[in-house]
Length: 166
Length: 448
Image 1 (cartoon, helix red, strand yellow):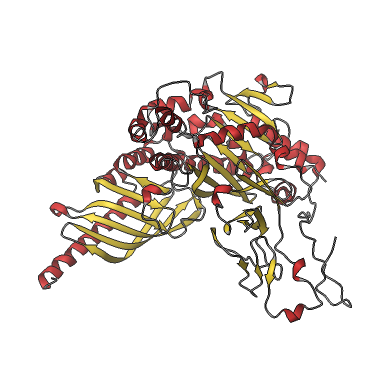
Image 2 (cartoon, one colour):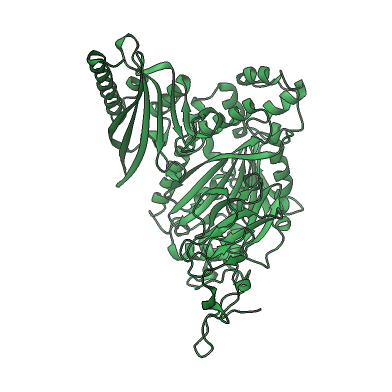
């Protein structure tokens, strides 16, 4: 039952989740990928699906479907200097907003939001617009990412190569 | 050929091209006699990458005249199943009709030209134009149009189907052509056919199925991508970050071609070419008994619960695909474990699709491993494709420097041999495949 005290706690949880999502956005725009890795639960999944309707990501082709190992490899690739596209990646500025809480429990809050990234490279600015879903664990009072799903609005169209993290 | 006029006889008639007439070049603005200078046997002029007039002629003389890959049969298992795609700039629908035949139809209402389908894929009973509700059957026949009294004595429905392209299918690969008098698809594929047959063996006894695709664009000419499929020379350089992300065993196998004398590049005629990078897995039916890669141990154990040891080996050995890239001029490549499809958008922009493949009816756990392998390298967010795109865009940008400085495609001329059937072979890192593509390019561009 949601009494005033629970509502207040819940709002605090929601506010902490939003603060956490904004922190993540800041780290990604600054390309502080090693710090970004620290936001994750070891079991967490980073997903960029192609099919706008799929929820069975393992059974379908995605742009990214990263467990911890793949996230670490991806960060290694982007920071190693061996990748021409990552070394000369677009600079990004992203705005995350339109937050709604789709579910929460004592330990997990799920937040849906919108994300607009402007990516600038060689005189061209490209927009990457997406719906986001963050599942954030709140165990022990420290938020950590259990799942992040990025549904690009043009996921089934031809994209430009992406040398940064969404 | 019968023509239908839409104008009263007292006015000048508008002639509709008869069904199946090939696309007619609208203008000839280039000097074809100069093409040999611009695209020599071992070097090309940089303007081949950015000349907009040349690009228009390429659409007319290559993409609207030859066989162009449009879909795989597995994408159309049932009557009514369709996919839409584009040949050059022309939108088409690939659809299986009620008789089971595959039709490739111009996606353009015969009335005022609107597209009749904007979905990427689906199942339909027919196609209805959103503008005035002219409706077409799956074979393109015009079934109905509203208020037909306005056409009584003017034209016949039977004369106004969606225009059909010629269709050819080989090993499930569906090709189409605007050119009704083109040679048979089998003749066109010619020396590439045995290699297509070998490629399809990665189904491990199951039919091959298209299983999703990555699509991305790069700011560069389509021929830069055409060159790339048999350009193994670039691989250890451009894909270093990908190789750092895989196990050493796989990286060693994938790059063994750099020093292997058994790895080769070969021209196959008609612009097609081949690059064999792992000779040991050219024919997946031939099992040399080598231990399976350790990273697939867990999967092999799962498969062993339902499959014989021989079947497990066959499936696991096929996960990475075959040991070669086959480049089919002008728009398809069968590249180890996936289809690569290119679409020219403009002289300076190209769309690429990487179609993932699965075993149709095969073990789900193995098909999922294939998906993960594909995601790892391919697509705009993969560990490989973005670096390819970066290199290709650099080529496009750099090609403006020194318009009189040629692009070289002469690597390996010093060790190229020619077989009795005319196929040329050199080392896997050599540019024999590119030379074959440009030879065919010249042949087609110099046609009247």
